[in-house]
Image (cartoon, rainbow, N blue to C red):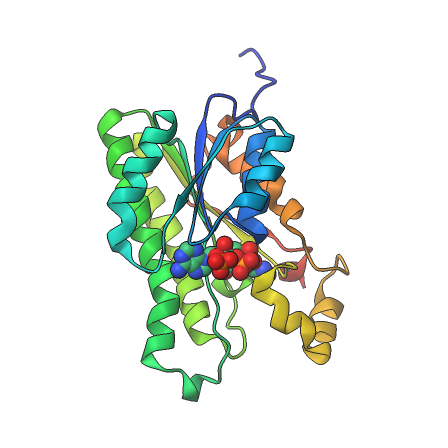
Length: 255
Ligand code: NAP
């Protein structure tokens, strides 16, 4: 078989990334634009900064403003996304929240708010795009953003751990059903990354020191650190990879 040296190119593809205005979502958007994709960012606020980063690559970017805590926004997201560039080929379920609190004090509201965006939205948005991909028989890629707490229990974040464990489970469950339709469902489990999500942890000197001393790479990760994994899983290079969660964690899980 002839070697395809463009295995990692996303030229001609369109990617929709949720939570595209900052952090890992912004990093993934920039990486996809650099790999040649048209990018759609879904976020509850302006993605101006992301748009500027993409413009630097000469890439195309469209934003869809939506509150992703409510699954009723899904039909509008699908419609606007399909209108933007014709067809969405890659969905990245990145938007997520974390609430830190002792398990005995977690309220129903806080529990539901974490599960709604980190788990419920991930499933129903994936379902909405997969329906179209099964119908048009052209395949697709879903990349879920999992966590170290897909593998471990964590401390004072029980709803987050429940949701991220569900993300890893869903990644396998959906891959089992959709692989035959040429839909790759995989996940990335970031380690401890310097974004808004970990701001409070990094401000807590003791916790920050504990975490850093346990990371073999000796530093917090950055949005750029997950760019390669995100492009790889969205590309033809990952065509036969289904249901796998790839840790990008500076070696955290190896300890
Ligand atoms: P972040 O900077 O807090 O980004 C989270 C993104 O989700 C933001 O764009 C945020 O928008 C968006 N979002 C939250 N609630 C939303 C809502 N109701 N509607 C629309 N968008 C909403 O943190 P991050 O680290 O980049 O997180 C990205 C993903 O990585 C999350 O799923 C997180 O759980 C996961 N993760 C992060 C780490 C880490 O160490 N940082 C580790 C493992 C997994 P706003 O800016 O408007 O809040």
